[in-house]
Length: 120
Length: 120
DNA sequence: CAGCATCCGCAAGGATACTG
DNA sequence: CAGTATCCTTGCGGATGCTG
Image (cartoon, rainbow over all chains, first blue to last red; front, side, top):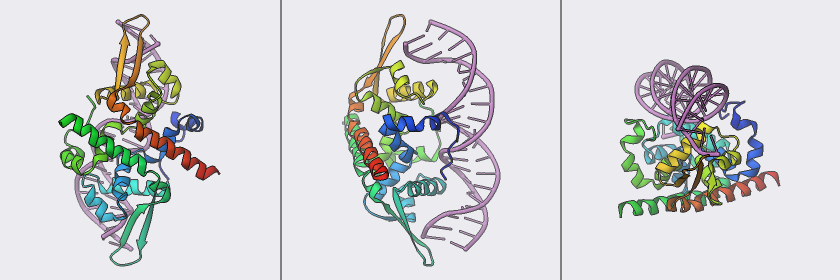
C-alpha cells in the first residue's frame, strides 16, 4: 500500500536493523513530516476530517489524506465514517496510537523548552 | 544551509503554526528518517564517524553526513575534529540534543511494546 | 579516516480541478 | 463534506569515484 522501493538498501537488511535499533521500527511508522503533527492533533480527542484541515492549514489535502491512510493502515488511527449525506468522517487514535502519546508529549515539551531557551 | 523552498506553503505561515503546534517546531528539526536513529545511537555517548557508519549500516555516506550536518547546524549535536592524521572526528549530543532523550526513549519503549503485542 | 563532488531516477509533495 | 484525479516540479536518496 505504502509505495516503497522494493530493492532499496533500506529494505534489504531491514529486519536486521529492527532488531538492533528499535527507533527504526518506530520511524517506519511515523516518518513523514505530518504524521506526528496529525497524531498530536488527535491526542485531544477525535476530530473530523475538516477539523484536521483547519487545525493544520499548511498541509495540502493530498498530503493529509495520504498520511491519514498510512496511519490507518499502520493501525495508529481509526477512521469512522457515518453513512449520511453529507458525509461525516472522524479520526481518532487507536490503542497503539494512544501508546505513542508519550512520544508526542515529549516532543511538545521539548519544543516549549527550546523556544524558551531561545527567546528568553 | 538546509535547503528549504523559500515560498512554499509551509514557510508562509510557519510562525503562526509554531505557536499553535509545538510538534511542528520539533519536526522542523528532527524530520528526516535517519535523524532520530542517529540521535539514538549518540544517546549512549559520543561516537566517531566510522562508528556511526557501522552502527547504521543501511544509511549511505551521503545521507549520514547530510543529516549529521543538519543536526549540527540545528544545534542538536556537537562535532569535534582532532587535527591529526588520520582525521579523528567525534559526534555527541548537545544540551538541546540531550533534552530530546525522552522523545527517543519513548520511541524505543513504544517499539518494544508494539513488537510484543504483535509477536506474542 | 572522514568526508566531498557528481550524476541520475524515482517518489514525495504541491496546485488545481473534479465527484459521490 | 470528504475525498479523487491529474499534472507537474522538486529534491531525496542511491551509486560511484575522488581527496586532504
